[in-house]
Amino acid sequence: MKYLSICIFCISLISCSKEVDETLYKAYSPSKVDESGGTWKTFILASTTDVAISVPKLVTDAAYLKEIDSLKTIVIPGLTATQKKAVEFWGAGAVLRWNEIGRELAARYNIPPASNAAGIYPVPNAADPLADPKFPFANPPYTARALAYLSIAQYDALVAAWRFKFLYNRKAPFEIDATIKPLLPTTNVPAYPSEEVVVAQASYVILLAMFPGEGPFLKEKLTEAKNAVIWAAKNVGSDVEAGASLGAGVAANVMARAKTDGMSDANNQTIVPNLIARSTSLGFINPWKSQESPARPPMLPNYGAVSTINLDRKTLESIRPAIPYLENSSEFKKELAELQDIQKNQTREQAAIANYWADGQGSYTPPGHWHRYACDAGVAAKYSELRMARLLAYVGSALMDAGISCWETKYYYFSPRPQQFGLKTSVGLPNFPSYTSGHSTFSFAAATVLSSFFPENSTKFLNLAQEASDSRVYGMIHFRVDCTMGAKHGRLIGDYAVNRAQADGAQ
Image 1 (tube, rainbow, N blue to C red):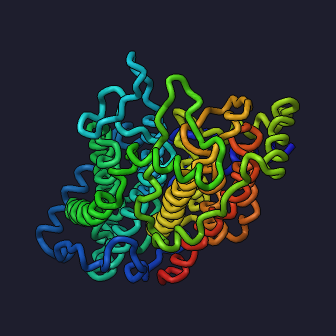
Image 2: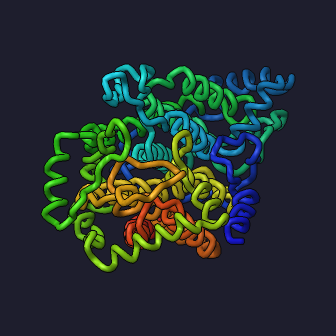
């Protein structure tokens, strides 16, 4: 059965669980260290010289030797069980672990606001993030954007870090003093600045902005990540300080872009009447409307106006999928009949696939699902921190562009969902228009990028994307055309990320 074969793949490679799994990953030596990484093209930074760090002390300098002596007092006597656990956890990869944390937060905050006694759905407030309803509501577009900026900040920061590492070429402590024994696999990558701390500080800044109610939790993780590289004898204090400075500087640049990308106006409900009027003018007899009671306002009706990463606005509009089948057409009636047949005769396999890919409330949504796949593929390939960040930046940016492009399409047509024609579903009731399918667009955009990075696994990724797309038909959430056109759209969006990757100098 197809679903079982997919789940075997998930368990062995990526695990069907969408929760953070601290035991799945172990430290490894990367297959290559990417010495030229400091020359790779960045996403947000115009140049790696945009953010600077201090010239390090020479390894013969008294101040550096004092740092070495200080390190010995920590690592030579031995670590506590708590310290060892932290070293093991963070040693699996800083990019990997912070992506896990981002996905964990997305799942934690993926809770749609409930209606109050007046029948109104309150809007989460960024200025009071822990009030009910909590900010943010980490729906699929929000999660895609948060993880995209997280990954882009990690990547740009590591490109800058690689430049400084090989510019200053200050070796790791264990190469300076043979009595220091590192607790993790080693490479010949220079130690200054610490790549793990660069990632930690950049990730902290981005995730705190995206999940402002999680300050204490994120601060605890940041402190632990910084300490872990000392406990593992990978770095001295000045390596850590330089990494924190660089990571913070790059993240500030990334957040400057995020603050002006249009997200603040994404939930603008005042535009909805005009969107509905356009839908009617295009020939839709029954534009989408909420099937909940009380009626829930449409989710993020202006998200399609958010700035994309790998394509411009003109391109976004030019590749918008053509109008779907109208209600009085023979094609529409045929697709409605398909869903009616599934409702009467749904197989166990179809139900299992629909439920597995539901990615609803309390999950890290389809974008998080695909980030997990990317992380596991990078681990299997033994990617360096820099190359792992590059992979996630391209997957993440494609997913963000997919969300923006899909939402622009959804609200351009404002097409009805199957539930408006008597169909029932057991996998959630999205409060936004039907065409195109977000699952299909997200999944094929990500699968296209992953297939480019790992052509030997292209069939697996594309099969997973197809199953994610089909799941929305099996769950009677979407008409078939929503999914086939979403898949086509996702491939196009993924291609823009692939084209950018092929020109960044990392091949």
